[in-house]
Image (cartoon, rainbow, N blue to C red; front, side):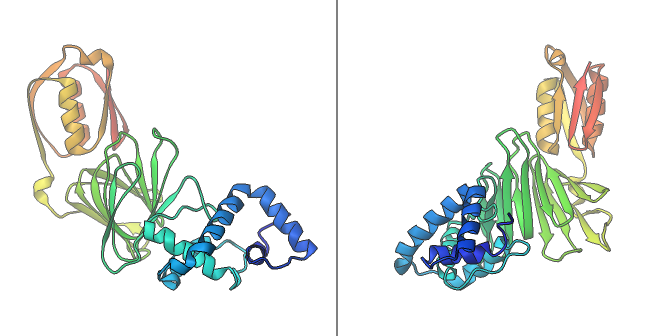
Length: 313
């Protein structure tokens, strides 16, 4: 049975204590069976807010305009007016907290951070990263466990300062995707088809379909005519990295390169031992540093991705 058909209207009448026809009651029972956790959360929210709404002084209309598009599903009819005030108040409360979780209506995985004001707002994500949202911007944060990748969906414009947790941090803005390990950058996705990525520190991989561009500090790339344009160097001084090592343990040298160039370099445990290096490097790309390290320790290296390398015997 397709319980999506008219279920919003049935839920509205149910929570407003209006009588249901036998057919409507059957659909409600089927919905409960298929969406027990969602129904339970919605029921608790409605009961609580129904008793608290007299003491709430919130901009219900503005909050509802922000949240309502995210509650829409194909072929569903809008909620009837009898449930509108209750869910609008719920939306207001959740938006004031800065977090709205949903999957259907709610989800235990994603968290939504929205800026419904006229000034920029800073939010702290669950992994410790921070995001500064421009007006009318929002991000949805999702992760599957502490060791899995971090997935973010952006609408609008935002500045990210990503915590270097040793696991991927991917931002999706329409068709554009930006992958990082830990860095700071701005994504402007306010206009579809004219997205722009600017890197402040570190390194990111920007993808649009099969097109891929690697950006480092002070570089920018823009989308035009459904294609990634050429990257532009906004700060030439940040193009070259200088490293000086004097009898430095290889693990320590690698750690410094990782931090300054925002890449991941895995070193075979067999190389850690007494291996130390003395050299001066002026490099633009991490692979150049990895290549020189491999020569100095008489070992090999693999390029797993533009953001990750491996040095081994």
